[in-house]
Image (cartoon, rainbow, N blue to C red; front, side, top):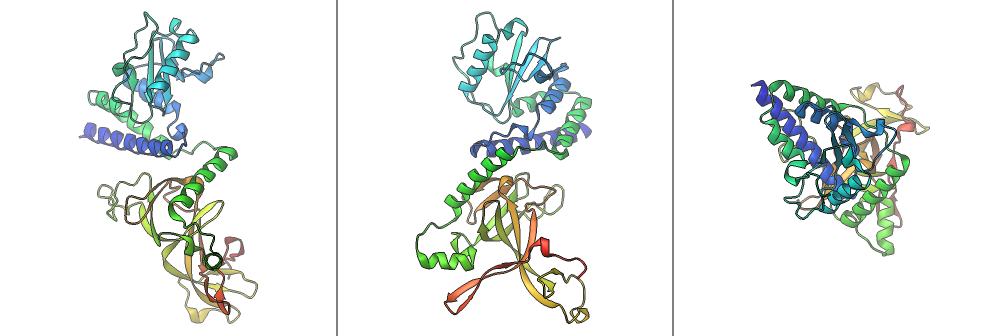
Length: 357
């Protein structure tokens, strides 16, 4: 039973990783840090009884390889690019740097799904490189795990679980900026009306949701496997997807309105706090009780993909601590009926929240 349990969990973790990598690749975001070279190193060390270490640990660094085992004369490159041209480029660089003199075997590990075939690769005479054996991906590893001892399965399962919940490496400000720009352009293209009509600009100014093509969208975690069910059939926990109303898009966030309201208390200076479970009659006369809607601000850099194949668009998000959003903000929705009947959207920002109210 333990063997089946470990193998099932490994397959699920590989599926999550492959799904995440493929989405990033489709968005031209080759973020290989999703699963680090260190963890690939440890998985292969356990499975094949190797002694791989990271090539960066050595003074002489080679672009063609990421991991190396000098004792067993094995070199490995880890890449999300499965194209034949990438494999050939790696081989060319491997031979150009003379690495075939130090390593008898070159393995290319694809972080995703490799191609069905890699015909007519140019390999230096005398060096053995068989694509079916020396190009690995998650599926190939799973097939080999089927024959691995239970102890090895347990170790690999633990590594994958630790990797998933470990603190993530900090991404540079430049990388975050570029990702925001890519995702923002994709949202504009997929979800927002483009118009130069002045009257529409006025409506958008007072109620930003007016510019969206779709009233409702689905927010879904990239690790969610329960959709369209509300509860995960395996864990029995609430599924990591939910439906929201489109609201606004700015330089940093996609804003969505969730499907419930809240009540807050506000003083004359605009400071506020949630009413929560307090009785309205117990609130000081100096405070005003306001019923508000609530928006969630989803960081653009956490959005991975937009799927328009469903009736409502589905936005895949890299949840942080099981949350798609960075902030939940009470707000009053604006509107524009005519020049004498209008109201601008008003946000009760977190910087004005006073928990003592």
